[in-house]
Length: 478
Image 1 (tube, rainbow, N blue to C red):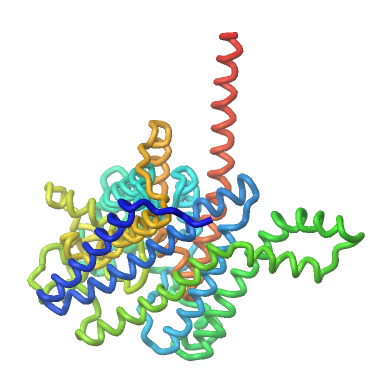
Image 2: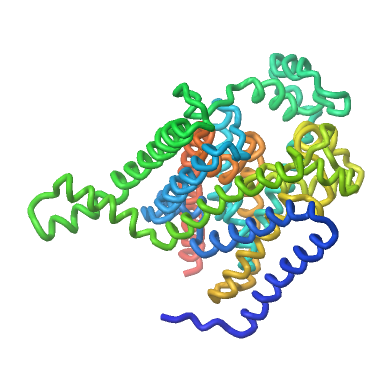
């Protein structure tokens, strides 16, 4: 059935694209350095279109799986991870990758669990909430705001919370030799980062197997096969065994008396191929994610920089650079950090010093959002999702009810905490890391799955409890 797109939708889609084109032309006319920011912008736009087209959301994936037994989105995410892993392996083998693995430890699982609970409460993950904001969803916008506010506040909390910090963390953090502008002694997240997280091993599957990541064998065999494909296939087998196998076997038994291994292989393949729209979105996401790393590294070589902070300094935008002269510039798809910077920048302008902690003051900075590369990516992601939603006639402003607003804020709160403890969300903490052969990505994923299970169980309990009360009141009225 052909979708009839209203003329006003086409006009608005044209306006959004035209706005980004105009920004690109105007900034390039100002200076060629802006090409660096434009690369983030247009890749963000592509991500937004892909996410909206495939309804690509990690919260929906595990909520649908645990609540109603629908595996479509989980399957699509695993396919996308493998496809991204292939493009990442190619980029890694060329030596042009911008990816940097994260410290691996039990903290990643705990953080993933907290994040998983939050995304189920909110009804959307970090990236899902961004693209749904582009669809006009007011609940998703509240989730984004809640995540951002939580993160920017969470990383600067000290005082009473410092009493929760183990003495070994405090001592280790103090020994790191950070400059005096970073007040490590009055920030428990700083002591957690410098005193614990930074002490954890940073490695990838290729290195664990004694290979070099930038070699063909390390990139494709170590990271892609061992570090990406095998774990993803194990999850797909788990999904098939517990959620698909029984129903598929019933269909086969209607035709004959037994189910063979060959039948189950066919059923497994059918499960994978049934997620065509999500898989197609995953294909484009995987290619775009790998290509972004390649492009950003090429631009860094062209301009002779290792971080966008140098470019901002050359352009005269020194305000908000970290103590190292850097800004958040991952070089690949990331979501939550730049949203935290939006709120942190506002707080900084209002007089709350956010530059005395490690997250903003030492690593990511607080540049003006108008000149922050990752900010351009998130804004363009929302724009790309809006364009796709308009052209598919799926754009609609949706005001949140009070109940949904509460769940959105609570979910965003937990996702904000989980993101900062893990140094990433469902994208930066799982998708990108797992696809690049980082074991920390799979640890975050395991925690996220567990957290989603807990979130679904709690949400079901809450709903049943609420319905029971409403029915009790109805019985009294009757």
